[in-house]
Length: 212
Image 1 (cartoon, one colour):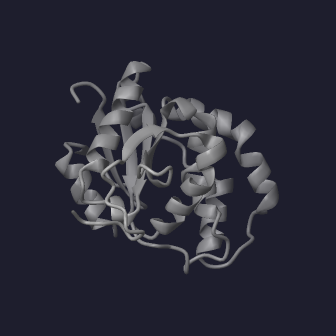
Image 2 (image 1 turned 60 degrees about the horizontal axis):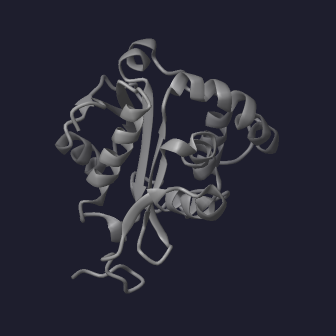
């Protein structure tokens, strides 16, 4: 059986609810290590926390009912799938509870290179398109470390989150990925996600939450 980088086989791995107090550091680490179109972005930024501030932590903190991790069986987190039940309401709440402190910490126009682009996203939040939010009101983020990829966990984790969102009344979910992340694009296509018109920045996909 193939082994992970730390010698384990993931034979005891399981999807479980995210425990923010215990797992948040792991979410930040995984988000950074997959931030460059699925590859490690650690050498691309000066501040290693920026990726997690944007793409992982707010979902786990503000919507814990739809935050799940892949535990390798020893308590070590090797992947996560995170959702926002209603992305419009999520962003409204984040405008009060999440972004203000980060905007104070990272002033507009600060940072260099990729850091500056990520900081700009803290200040200028992309507004969900009305048509997309109406059909697919939920948002999804998933990342797995390389050692957990290619084992079927990605599909199982997405199905797990879709079930959680469906039980909460969601009609559908959308997500975006980098045009350079060809593996992710192929992955979502295989899972039956509908490709939405590109927004000029990311490749967007959507899927109804029923029938999974």
